[in-house]
Amino acid sequence: MTEEDLLMHSIGKENHFRVPEGFFDDFSNNIMKRIEENDDNRTETFTAEKTPVNKPTIFRRLLPYSVAAAIVGVLFGAALYFIPSQNDDTTQSAQAQTASLYNNGDALDQMTEYAMLDNEDLYSYMSSNEY
Image 1 (spheres, rainbow, N blue to C red):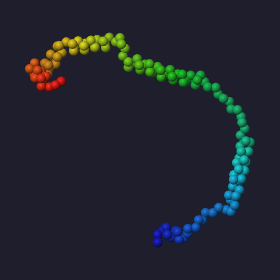
Image 2: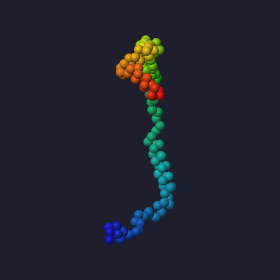
Image 3: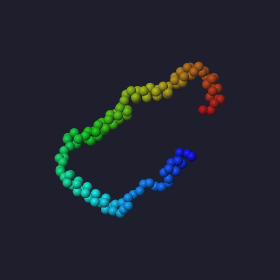
Image 4: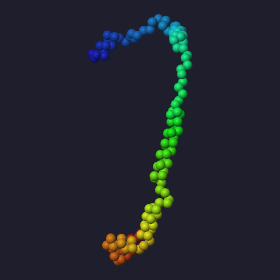
C-alpha cells in the first residue's frame, strides 16, 4: 500500500469540516449590526475638522511656466545650432569651389592621370560597356 492509501484508510472520505447548526440563518442580520456599530464608533472618534489649507508658494505656481520656457529655449537653441543659416560665407565658397572643379576639364584630366589611363583605354572602356 502506498502512503496515500494509508492516509485515505485512516481519515476516510468523510468531510470533517462542519458549520454549526443555524450559523447562516441570521448571518446577514449579524453582519449588518456589526457594520452599524462600526459606523457609530467611527462618527464618535472622527470629527470633521477643517485642516488648514496651505497656499501654494510662488515657486509652485510658476514651476510649470518655467519648465515650458526651458523647453522652448532648448528647442530654439537646437534649431539655431542644427539648421545652417543661408548667409554663411563658408558654405557659399565651398559650393563655388566644387562647381568650378566639375565645370573645369582639368579635374577629369587629373583623375585619368591618377588612374593611369590614357585616351585609348578610355575609348575602349566606353565602347565595351554601356553606361
